[in-house]
Length: 375
Ligand SMILES: NC(=O)c1ccc[n+]([C@@H]2O[C@H](COP(=O)([O-])OP(=O)(O)OC[C@H]3O[C@@H](n4cnc5c(N)ncnc54)[C@H](O)[C@@H]3O)[C@@H](O)[C@H]2O)c1
Image (cartoon, rainbow, N blue to C red; front, top):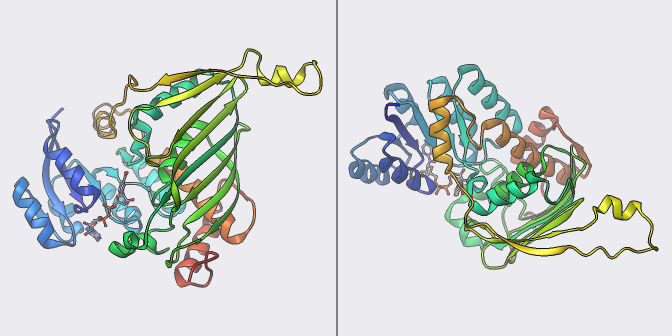
């Protein structure tokens, strides 16, 4: 395969890492950058001998590129991705795929129609610990999933939002802790448990002065029959806790040092001698104290391709990237369902009614409705 001619739109935050990765990858050539911040971009463009544009549309019109990385604030993902696809470029899009599932639908349809690859930056699916977790669940070691308890908790002070105001508005971020911090966790949850079909949630702005939710608690039903409860907050001490229970055992994981788990790690896995269904279906008194046999599973040997590797392979051989657009749409659809349920105070069945969610977002942006606790 020839080198991929690539551009990056949005270069100051996480985009900087993408610029460095492309510039040092033998399979790619960095040809152009786009950002509103001309001075920051010109420094970077000079360093990498690329062209620089303050208007990304000019870049798409003028440059002969094979692929583009989009690393801009959330509300720009949908429009920028669609324009890049229209210009014939494969897209590596930072998460979330879009703020609204209706925009994600347009991206999935356009990529399919044009035969172009869209990969979304849910790179937690490629982290060794999560790769191992998926392997364990898919192997059937703990049987079919029954219930999941998942917590992502961390404190984000106001200074975090003051620095980049786009992170805390419905218009730009499209949500708070759900969209910004925990879209990775909700993405992993769907990756492990499959399609969500029902959501009942409460969301709050518990402690911040901005518009969007900083705390969410949701019960989620999956097509498989598994039930999950998630607790997500930027108003807490740090904790990432996962308990994944199935018919034949359970997985436990806890990290109080870093909620954004990304290093190889050890999961505790407990398996039962007798499956839970047989235990509860059998005799032997009124209570059965089934005790799992516990062992630690070291994840450091798990194979973990990077999302960029998978993006490049998908372009070369037509395979689906690890985080393809359809699976990233499922994640944003779950987030939209949690917001819809939390604000409208009702149980939401999936697929989410696109018009209903678009209407809710318009009301949130105008300030006609508010998340409880917000100013
Ligand atoms: N995958 C991850 O783990 C991860 C980590 C951090 C951020 N992100 C995602 O990356 C995206 C960017 O986040 P960030 O933290 O880098 O934000 P940021 O605000 O630091 O950077 C955004 C960049 O986009 C530029 N930009 C804004 N509007 C633009 C426009 N119209 N045209 C061109 N450039 C424009 C800004 O000038 C800035 O350089 C978000 O979607 C965020 O959720 C993902």
